[in-house]
Amino acid sequence: MTAQRLGRPDVVITGIGMVTPAGADTQTAWKTTCAGRPTAAADHRLAGMAVPFSCAVAGFDAELTFGVDARRMDPFVQYAVAAAREAVGDAGAQDGAWDPTRVGVVIGTGTGGQGTWEEQGLRMHERGPRTVNPLTVPKAIGNIAASTVTMDLGLRGPSLAVATACATGSTALGLALDMLRAGRCDVVLAGGTEATVTPLVSTAFDRLKALSRRTGDPAGASRPFDEQRDGFVLGEGAAVLVLERAEDARARGRRPYARLLGYGATSDAHHLTAPDPAGVRAEDAVRQALEDAQVGAEDIGLVNAHATSTPRGDAIEARLIDRIFGPHTPVTSTKGVTGHMLGAAGAAEAAFTALSIADGLIPPTANFEAAGADIPAIDIVHGGPRQAAVPVAVSNSFGFGGHNAVLVLGSA
Image 1 (cartoon, rainbow, N blue to C red):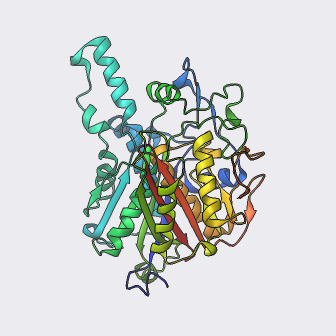
Image 2 (image 1 turned 120 degrees about the vertical axis):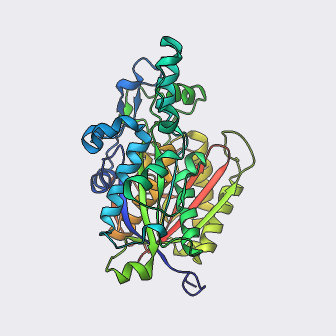
């Protein structure tokens, strides 16, 4: 049964904007990801840290994009606005195409302007309180990416910021789906943004033993599901998707990338940082999303896994994928290329999933060579992209604190 038959409007993705380590626009990011080219490399911002490498945004020039206004924006805001601009342009929204009072924005972040807080805290400590930038708070608070997008594009519908750690981007898309189904908006720009490649964040994650210590081979450090995985690589960037009702997209002659069919969300209620070892509530989120989309596990042609390259998390997710989808459903993790974009990860991976559906191409899991003994025999796409029809796909996101958010996308 389709969403339309249930009396709900079909919701489609008509625009995608991306600023990522794989490229500062959607096509470059997609090409790099399909080539399976890892982006992790030494990062001057982390010089002297125990883990001196990251997956840094590539090819983005804030001064060129925003001019002097760049100084008023933390990078997490810059990334979000640039991605939103691209997404709206990609959606073909000419002047007057949308009523701006009916266009919503849901753009989340895990940490907000972390770099601004660190920079200004250090300035106050070293040079005194009078040297602190008076724009520190409006540059760094978590809602400011969403609100700046509304100001930049002149959008006057509801604007929201969500924060569910590494599930944030998927949560934003799920909330946008609900808003469109409820008729609160005609269009929603939804996604996530993050700029946490900073000395403090890198050190804090390393102290949690969450980061890869593969300092002699940064490019090989992010290796989801692989037997040699030892932690994730810190990434950054943004992804914003334009969602609207299918009938509205048809009326203005837009061919969508994909439909957003369903959303599921649960909480582990287990631990501050560790996932529930049984993966029960994460599995529930997947099953909720399938039910919401009115599809069965047998219909799924791709699972874009959360798989961050951590020993424990990847094994838990692989087991739940095996339980639900069995050994023959193709599985990929694009984090082998991008690293872990934290609050932006779910939105970026939803974008990659939509592109897989549109292009019939599954990107490989970069750096995957052999599965660990704790990984069941699932079909991990690796070695190169795989040509395959993907009628329906699942994109998983799981975050610190036990946030689970799962999206189901389908062909348009």
